[in-house]
Image 1 (cartoon, rainbow, N blue to C red):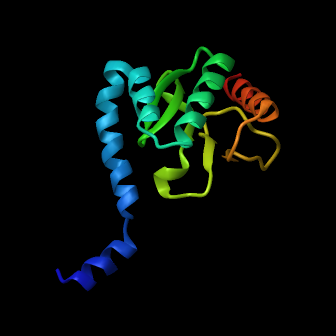
Image 2: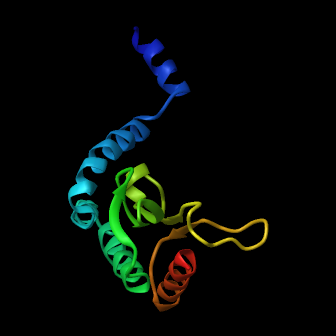
Length: 143
């Protein structure tokens, strides 16, 4: 395939970042079976700053607010699950070259509020107000 054809094919399919995330997911399925917490903490420690500091704090907030959730990885991101169902995850800004990190909740999270509600939250910095809000969201998500 010529270079131009290859680029056109990729434009219609997955991006390089998405392909890398899928490969990471396959690897982490094997790692999580052994030790999900170690895998999640390893992902956090490999993040560049300021993502690493933010992810460390998010990890503490989530594990304190919902000690029943198990840390693991999910598509290359630190995630927290109940049984085998991911409830929430942290996506660092540098992963997809975004301008902010996100805390996301899966459809398994109990955040329902009428017919429309947010499931992903942009995070640039954490203060006490933001930490309390995250803790409340996580508690609601698991109850």
